[in-house]
Image 1 (cartoon, rainbow, N blue to C red):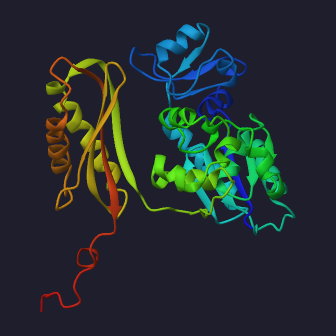
Image 2 (cartoon, rainbow, N blue to C red):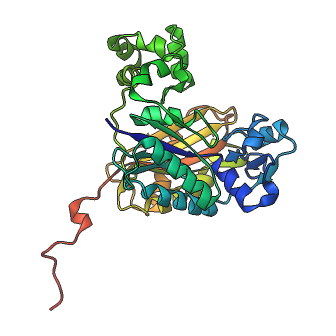
Image 3 (cartoon, rainbow, N blue to C red):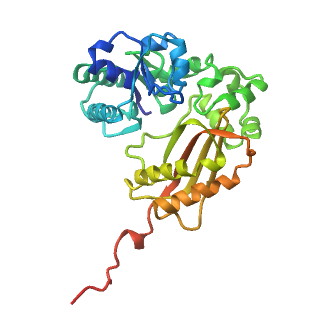
Length: 357
């Protein structure tokens, strides 16, 4: 049986700002550009008490907490702090799977320092982060990734929680179905329509019925309701997608989006060049003025081989958006997905290539 730890930094971006500027400590800090269309990147726990949350429009955050201190994000500094956190994690195991700058899974079934339990490993990691980086982290310890991620939220901030194998069924049963990974508003509403409110309710349904209503995800729901998650911790996972998006200062009609789409395509292309793999599918993401999200994608016979080729496809995908000329858009994004290894012939030169005499 695996021993999995999920480490989650507490209000990471805001905590880095408070650490580096003593004048911000104890104050409601909101990491966001103070612009009409910006969104909150992070909020300190002092700001969260007023209802401020990540991904919230900055204007709403300001209304909820007029005394908030707004700090523009400094991602190079956050990446540097994240790198140091990862160095600490790697002292304990090579099986570290970063999920983002501020969280990661670890498989500590065997750990490098021969600590007696996964609980001891998590405590040591949190202590090292606190002593060396002056930041705090929370941790969840469980037999699998699904449970460990839930557990890390249980004693936030600056705490840890253990779900032991014999506790899984009793722990999960009273939880609302929204706590299951992948269950968003739409899936939750469909489950509620079936009179399913808790994980315990979900556990009572047969797999066949869940598959009838939710397709392949039905099997996943059946397993997670029983605390089953066989996914291994995967260090250094290959790139699956790269994207860039931007919120406009004012809502724009569809025909006015081309300059923004081309600019975002260039950002995406530059990001994709950091991997040796090739992205085959081009994705255009749009968000309307009433916050409706639309995506259109295309997998061409030959993957885009330049920033311009990527931009041309993304711009052309607008033709598959049919919401009417009156619709205005507040955000656009361009992505590349379905990455794969380059063909062998392209990856290495032929052994029989001609060379000068």
